[in-house]
Length: 318
Length: 284
Image (cartoon, rainbow over all chains, first blue to last red; front, side):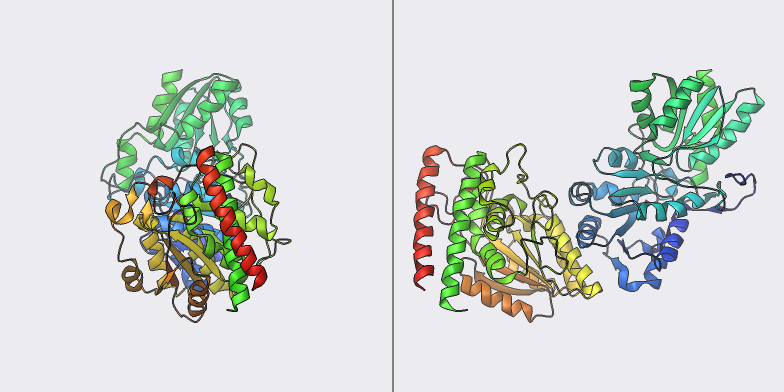
């Protein structure tokens, strides 16, 4: 079997939302499910499914709260539903509908929220939601998935369809490097993936920060620091085993996420280590502040959500 | 509808009131006012109209019911118990730790409950989801829902209203329990939602105004709704706390349980009404 990682600096860039939209359309013939949107089907890419399977596509208009409860009603009638909007409105505005209509009854609704994080770009703070994982992680019955790239997003769509119950999946607007080779990569809900082994520090990355973590690993290696990189695509239920294993092995942890440092991956990892194996750690993420307008790539640098940001945090622990 | 049937549905409604009171009294909390106001609607649905099977509560082609005003579940629990979905004795456990009869209905705990509700505005949307699924899948079941008048202050109700009309959900029949009161007082003083009929009509619904305590009017309104090509709302003028003299039209009884002395009065009034209804049903 070949490497799971595409070692090509010039590998193509694809937004995870695009992989999501294509996967829905591809899977529509194999499985029976509904897809819903709230007037953003072009942006969330659910329109591809909508054109192919109009009888199973329901546009709710700009009414996210209603969409989530309608999705619950469809799911309660026996058919899984993918419900999409921007993260800010899907799980920000409609939090209470998700909590009470979907999660409490444990209904089979997959909330696939695009345009998460600061890489929304020019739209600015009102649309850059960096608190979604914190919110969704706190809700009982909810599974939370944050794919790293197009390969993982596509595989995750089918995996969550086969996983009964409420799921929140976080997707991005920005075209990001395709990190994983679709012919070799395996995706399993709840299982962390070791992308590179190492003994000095463990970098737990989620979502698009995986590419930055791999880049940081190379920089660190050149300076004699041997970093492991572990992809935590499922924030809940989190893979405790892999976290404990690498915490005990490396004694130092850095987490990296395009999300507030409050309540996201960093907090989830600290939840595990503080109870099982207290470990020194540093977190890369958005530091309790709102986003702002700019180009996505500029914003990642502005918030130090990049390889240099990870390298700096690793060095702070050495 | 034949007179005998009407009278026996009145009896079912009277018994729903008795059991609702028992639920709230034993729980020492809950919502008696709005449970008592929907007794006829619930009786009509569960004893006349809906295709449901207590021995097969998950029957795929069953009619669906969503109590969007989930806090008035004592009336729903009463009907489900009377239909045999679970033992009537269990009504005394409502809201108790360990009981499956939660303070707001839980679709996984209680056989016969089609949707977990409790947060106002959600249920009507969920009912739309069931209806749109049926339309798209050519399922024949109908979806019934009850919303409150105060509940229409939630914006989500109007999002759902727009949705139902847009997708021509004429398989959705919604009862609006217009009992005129919410926790803080008269709905028109707290936040006036009227004219409700004109609003629903403007949203594209088929609207009927009826006396919500008249089985005969409920029956003919539902039969009219069956013929509509639009989603239906049946605005039911009702009396909050109906059947208990001191609770009637009194917002104080929206969400509190009677004490022992108050309960005795209510119990005797509802029991007497039930006995009269039983006699009438028996004698045709």
